Image (cartoon, rainbow, N blue to C red; front, top):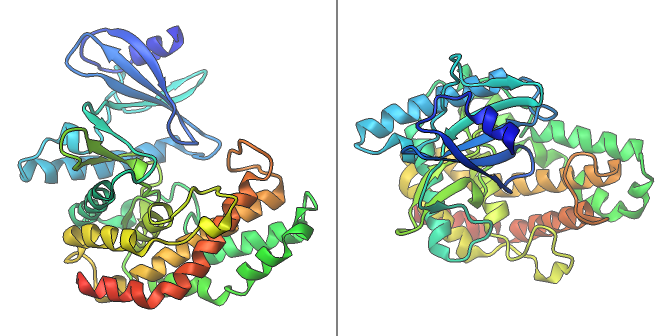
Length: 360
């Protein structure tokens, strides 16, 4: 940890570093809490350059979005240091530190707040939805086209479908032979894959600033009030559709079971949680979105779940190269839960549409 203390001291922090604690969050970057004898503690992260090939562009995106949010929060009488991530400058200027062990960036640590991995109380899901809705509202007039695409074609479902078909064709591990049913399920939905990208192409869905990883654990929730305080993990902030963000939240948060549940009879989309999230999200974002976006919110949920399912299955067929696994076959379990959710959402689509209509 001495090396981490030394790196932390290269940033313009208040006080001296008194301790370091590794925080086990997320699958991608390595994260530490930096304790100081000054006014603030900090979060130091080593950026995973296997995933994010150009950390400078990544930081430019985060800097642009957080500065814009800070101005809006100030105007609304809020506290930017608590309500948005704030990048800390290095002693040499800039917001990225390059060291022989990698690239590092630093934020203020947000105290008296927690990030949750599961919906332990419905109010948390509602408040997370309102926080993501507010994120969209505050960034409604941000010029999304000025952001870099940090991961090419991240939520381009037709592109993901082509990647999936290539993985099946390669069949690098021979595993494709054991998952023919799952492959057929995905391939039969090829036409559906372009439902959102076609609307972006014809201009009926605008490009917006999207977070692209809107899981519940990317919101800091206030320990006292349960309110959503701050949207975190902005590495995949880039131009996209709001339907991706809404859809991914439903995929992750309104599922009745864990992402790798083996017993598929336990896996379904909980309509009451879908309603909780929709109500919270639209309370903040409905006046920012256009009619097509509002009507297609349930399609976003199906799309993101299908896309995630095909990515898990492609990785399983390729030999588990992208997603971290903790046991053999975990990516297949993950894929199967996603495909079960897709089938359930398709059945429940009319009810999902009615719920959206109720809140717009």
